Length: 315
Image 1 (cartoon, one colour):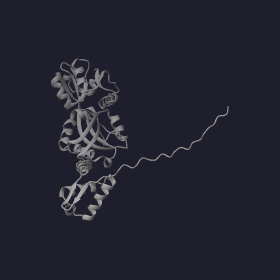
Image 2 (cartoon, one colour):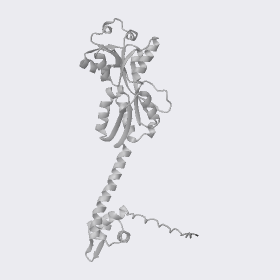
Image 3 (cartoon, helix red, strand yellow):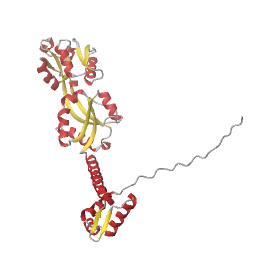
């Protein structure tokens, strides 16, 4: 049985009408007419020709397809639609002014969002006070701070995953800019009755006879200690690895091993845990803590202000 196929032509789809665009200047002049009572008074107040205002009002009414003003020999009065429009127009113009103010604040660095990656040494020693002072001056800036190891910090800044990085040591990566921030000194912490605390002429090589509590894999302090042990042709014997200085001190206090951490942090925890601090005289124990950015000139204004603030904090 033969079948019949009927081809039909698709009807063209008409695009939706463009949304109505209301000119903020026309809305402002419309509000002025209502407030001043006459077009002539509004023209004088706004320093514009009365004919120009009248033309804009007519265009508004034509676009909105409704009468907004009733003209009388005593002036004008708004229709119910005109009253509603004046309320909405005031709100819309206020929002536009707020947009302009906030964007100006962003351009001046008064508002913003700064992505900061830092290592544990910078976070525990210096950044709390430095960030507090910065946010006192720029309360509408948000600082998003994450702890990372040094290699991740530098890589993330180079790849634009972070605006500002703060790390310990030096960087050989050429696609980041390095700026000085602070310095710290490493020290050994041992239990109160540990034999190393009374060792005359103590050197770090003496500590290698004992087991260590280390920080998490990849930490800057671990790398420094491994390099120092290599210089002595020895190995670091890591008993336990932890993720923070407080956990390290808990482990040392329990007698599981000895540990190395920044001197200022060691002083804080020594009181809490009754630990003994043994200074490290080796040159590598004095560390540079540095700032890295991908390109300072390309940073958002808030991030530039933050970096400048960190650099000034060294004084």
